[in-house]
Length: 441
Image 1 (cartoon, one colour):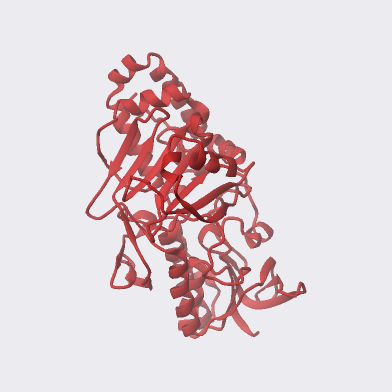
Image 2: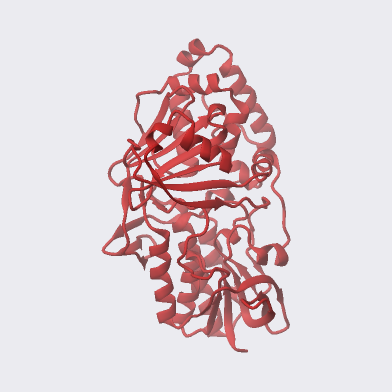
């Protein structure tokens, strides 16, 4: 058999997984559908989240390396950076929830293209064979290992055999959807994901803006913005990204919203699609025979973030190389990989997506559950305060709601009856989640 492993996907998880195996003497092929691995084609936050322990490690960017301080390895990064200290959510009338941290910053914006370029070079230097413009269609187990069917640049297809196939092709993974039993999420968040998947969003990069909020990840919520949520944040090169639920909503924010004045003299650099995929639950056991799911391919419809993808790819590469070199099946060592994978908070609950609901309506739920004047009231009670917090998707909501509910008496005076509405939402969540959340309401 020509290959010990075929890795599908040239993102952070696939690149480091293939590199780790090749460094241990394994024969590895990586296939990637894009023409160039480092070229950015879709919406991306392009940032490192600095919350300690997030996704199972604490990372640091220094000396041209992204260092994983808990697990003791690093990946190269020598591109530009821009530190974020503030996370601000604005209501329709301009009231704000403000989370911040300065030492270290809550996040570091980097260049995805520079990150992938450095990781691709390391993989090639380690001996990984890379084929671009090669789309993986499906994978299946064989008597001797597994094989993957790929569509080549000329349109022809080919089956490639290996001891193992690694699915690192993202949350829309064709390999996972054709090789693993799939479960769609139920509960509140499952219905929200299904609704969100009806239309794709757009992320537009703008240069030469007058955007005044430096070192800030900015979010707007409310029906007035024509989107469940709109994000604005700086790129590593000091441009500004704008991302909303739909292309129309992104255009509205730039051209017609109260923030349009900051973009009147700006230049559009590029528009990136925000792909929506059919939501599926994460894989509690990411191995099916000789096919292993890594990174977002293993997490269904949830993000790994850069550090999660890299850490999962690193752990998968380690166990695969150990199994191949020892002549045993990877299942013998798989617990080492699963331990890393399940550091993602999505695995805290049997209905995993509802972990994100534990501290109140999140993202698309916010504008569906609350009217604009109710969002104003919620944010008004903490407007002007600075709450210690970061970019962790679950913790940031927890910090926000704790701060709001500490002012529940004030909230009741501003908007009578809103607390009762929140209590009803809480009871609905408890019923669906089988929990006993109280939120101090």
